[in-house]
Length: 306
Image (cartoon, rainbow, N blue to C red; front, side, top):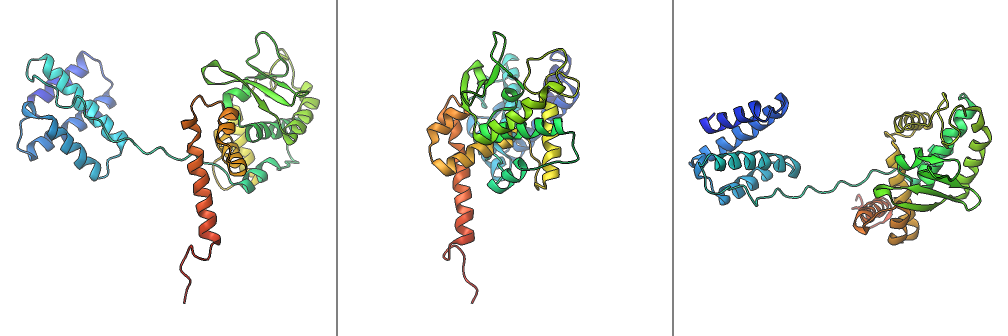
């Protein structure tokens, strides 16, 4: 390595006390900078903004993702800031250069059939109390679109300390979402019935704390990790051919509701999104669904064999 790079890495190791693995990543990214500068016949101290932009574009064309490029540029930017403090460069050639935005991945959702398969599962070999609880969990995650934190934060009834609670008479759940924003979520017929069945057997698990809606075998509030484990096992038992996690049921709720209603604003309110741009990702998922239907069903979608 060039001497400035070696001195900078030593600075990170000794003065910044950077972890070994992080230091290796910095070293890799700075070696890349050196190689690009050498290929371009330019000294590291003479690198200009147009060099960095061209190299960034080259790396992107070679297949580096936006996230990887952001990391690389961050390492380079820190190096030149340090060189500036050493009086070796006047301007930081990486300031203002940004990596291309990574495409936002589509949320993964179950099909309607898979969702029904999971919700309608009857596990006869499971403890009936736990079976009633787990069916109720699935119905609230899929039927109400709750976040996992909102689900486990539910209490049986409203109180001064409750983060959220169920009101069966009003057929709604009061939940505390992101940013400590409270919202009311309608509880549909299937979820309400699952709640009644669970509440009928729930007293068998109540011990010291009677407040939580969902309890574990020891009588304590169910944790997010426990819900994930139970949901994963339930999905396997239902024969759903994918890894199912709580947020996937929230995605499924939003996607299926949007497919049926087309009301983006209502879906935003039900999910508790602060910005409609967050909800708009489901329009892409809805279009993907429609495209698959078209490809499978429309006579003009594919060429006919002759």
